[in-house]
Image (cartoon, each protein chain N blue to C red):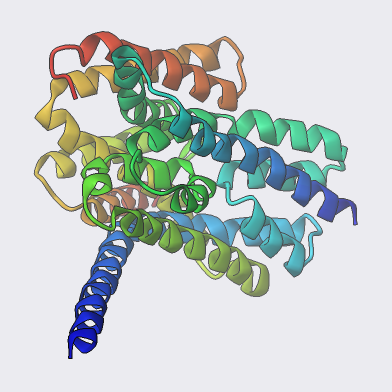
Length: 250
Length: 98
């Protein structure tokens, strides 16, 4: 009797835990839907262009699977098309994607308390978009099974990206050009849709974003590459938070 | 073959900067000012990602991106869900590219 009781007691929380994990995962997937909306047309376009650049279907899908970074993949494909050397393409990719190092530092600092085995796949799934959505839902990190929430966001984004590329490679231009061009606004609108509610709560957040925008714009004017301009805008713009966040200590 | 090499190279130089913080941050305790800096990074990143990139949505017509952005700001300030903000902005740009 005693032993039976013990097993029941062990099973119950385990099942509850599983249900809780699934619940968080599903909520994360719902939160990731705007990313899907933004990624699909871009991924399809990538598939089409990569095919035209002479990459095979396997190669372009593999690139989306292994690199998972939109801007870098477009750049890489262009460089392959014009016959740039491998080393040059790889260095340019590093420069363009270095901004993720800064974002990952911020994200991982938010995820303290989540086990390393979860943080590793989460860091690999970090893009501008998954970072933006995750970082603005930082309260989930402190909830039970919070890791599953972020994994849900990342899975939706990753699958949209990889399957979208594959579709573009197989079917070609399935989205009419005018529509896919209009959908280019999607990710910017998502960033705005994430930023505005935070700014409404704390105007200083808006000031930080504007400072970063201006620094980025100045860097672009000075002739820096997009990659470095975003890194510098983010790092220096974020620095204003050292002063601006002083009072509402988080 | 060269393409495969390029893809693997691109993958490594993208993965390493993403994954290093996962190992490093665990071992460090940051001073409060660094924590404030890091907690401001998402907002700064959003700013830097939005502008001036938004002007390149229709490369020849930077104003179309700006108008789409303004519509997104208005919809978002009404408290609309992000999905609706995105759809509203897409429709706006679609109408402006007729």
